[in-house]
Image (cartoon, rainbow over all chains, first blue to last red; front, side, top):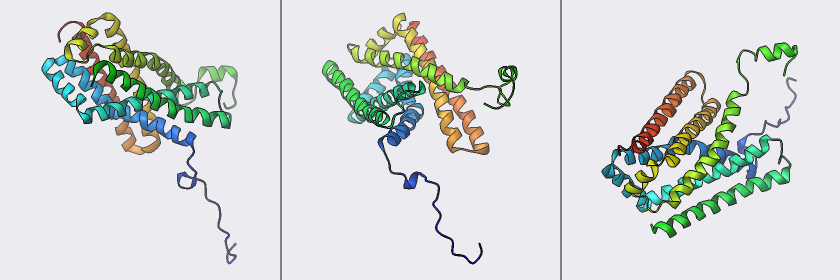
Length: 134
Length: 126
C-alpha cells in the first residue's frame, strides 16, 4: 500500500455529479411544493378564514391585498404549488401500488405532472378572471 | 423483515412499537385531500363573488362548513406528517427534537384557529 501511487477512486455519486432528469426534478418539487404550502400558503389560508370570521373590515384588508397585482401573483403561485403537489402526489399513489416503475413510463408520468399542473393553474385562473373579472 | 416466529412478528413491531402508521396515514389523508381540495378550489371559483358577504353566506351552509372542517383536519394532518419527513432528513440531534415540537404546536394551533373561524362563521357570528 504505502509508497504505491493510489489511483483516483470513484466517489459515491451525489447531487453535484448527477445529471438532473425530469423524475428527479418532479421528486424534489414534490417536497418543495408540499413544504411551501405547509409553511407558507397555510398563513394565507388562515388569514383568509380568520379575516372572514372577524368581520367585513378585516376581510376588506385581506381582499385588497389579495386582489392587488402582488396578491394575484402569489395566488397564481399557490395554485401552481397545489396542482403540482396534487399531480405528483397522484403519481406517487399509483407507484405505491407497484405500478409505473418502468423507466419510460416513470419519465413520461413525471413530465405529465409538470404539464398538467401548469394547464390546471391556467384553467383555474382563466375561470376566475372570466367569472369575476379580476 | 427479520427472523422470528409469526406470532413474534404479530406481537411486537420491534423497539419502535409501530410500523407503517405514518406512511399509511399520509396516504389516507392524501386521498381525502384530493377530494376535499378539488371541492374547495371548485367552490371558490364558482362563488358569485369573493367578497365578505358571499364567503360568509357560503360557509353558513352545512354543505360547505362540514367539508371545510374535514378539509382542515385532513390537510393539517397531512402536512404535519409531511413536514416531519423534511425535518427528519435535514435536522439532527436536539435541533430536530425542538423543530418537531414546534411543528406539532404549529400544526395544532393553525388547525385550531382555522376550525374556530369556520365554526364562528357557520354558527352565525361573522
